[in-house]
Image 1: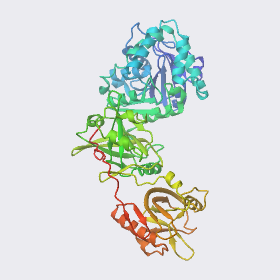
Image 2: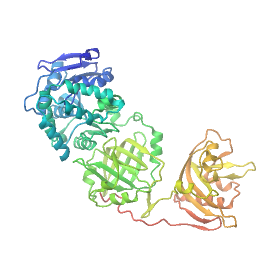
Image 3: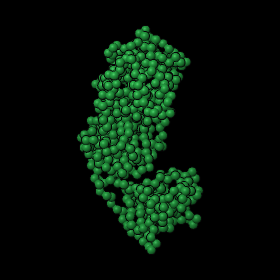
Length: 600
């Protein structure tokens, strides 16, 4: 251990074999193992945040800090045995293990060799089956090491881990990391790095035997220890889980200590009650979750995961629905005959992407047998590592909670780990056709100022009306869609009445049949119930609408259709004038196999 100030926040110790370590706190034991070039003191942020609940031990890995050199040609077992000797010295029968980068490989080796000594493992920024170009770059760096130090190489490492130039908010973390790199024994670094360069596939065949719960966590911007690698390891480990921290790179434990440590602690403290979903998820907003689920039409989704080799996989499906709010569960179905069924049936996680009305092409590609579907879409790794498609109306990033065989399909029930949604118009699918019933606000904003724009707003079986001084009722409407600052527009009226409304799909469009030409556009939508019923706001049960005094006969006719279609739960779009028109059929655009996930 090289940090002389460490004694201010932890106790120093040395095992009989010469291994140096620091220890702090009391409680459930947690052993930290750093990566190549670091030392035990790099874990100071985690020790300071965890010592009130855990017995935290951080070791100097062989060849690092004050610990002895490893063998000239070491194996992962040499480093795992070192950690076991420290546990023996401290009289600890069992501990959770947290490892970073090379230390993550050591943590896995320890859990595979001596599962009875390990409660849980956390693999931070671990490598796994590097792609050829990355593997070659790492082997070249290893071959160039001569045991005499490499200041230029250390500077390149800092740039790779933190950026070049280093962002101002990461300068302290970068200096801490650079200090550790400059203090490492060059020979110890060289021997360990050569092992690190060739050990990325050592556990590929053994991870399916990993008996303990394992969290594989990395940063979305870590190119050397990528989200695909963590997702692939989590997939192989029987009790594995992947978490990806948005925007973080390789040294996230130092660069984002609060966020990283919170995920570590949550995983280590997870008990049976939490695993079975007793109580709400920490920090999970059920109201926002409900609204995100409401983004789904009847709809078109692309379901994604990471395959066993770290490759993205996906298929189109509309068999999606919510299952539970507490715990947050959703489901999607995939046909047994689908090419991707073996992948998704054994996945540890998956993401459901609800498509917007401009993503028809992506829907078709993912419903086909195209060889490289992801070349046509932009995506980012979600929290579980599964691909989340850019531009989706909503996304639900899930751990696989349960797999159920149902006839010729499998039902994938997912526990939502993270979700997002926006106000874009979703892409639907009905009766063999794509459905895009929303009229874009951009197009409406460009319409002539005289357009009459209104809304049928519903909440819990009641529709919002405005009562006039003479006892007539009218729907909220204005001249154009407008903005909240335009008092004559629909949005201006709603703002003035303090009505929180969410406009949904186009419901009716008609032109006046008389000499004065005016276009009328009405949306369906929802609203949040106002705090009071003054300002002329009235909430009317749908079944009571027919009894209202409504002056405009065209609006009366439209509401009669609305009542009928509510009862039938089948809505159309009326186009015509105030006297006659039709509910036009939807354009036929085939969606190959989308409703069953038959292709992948």
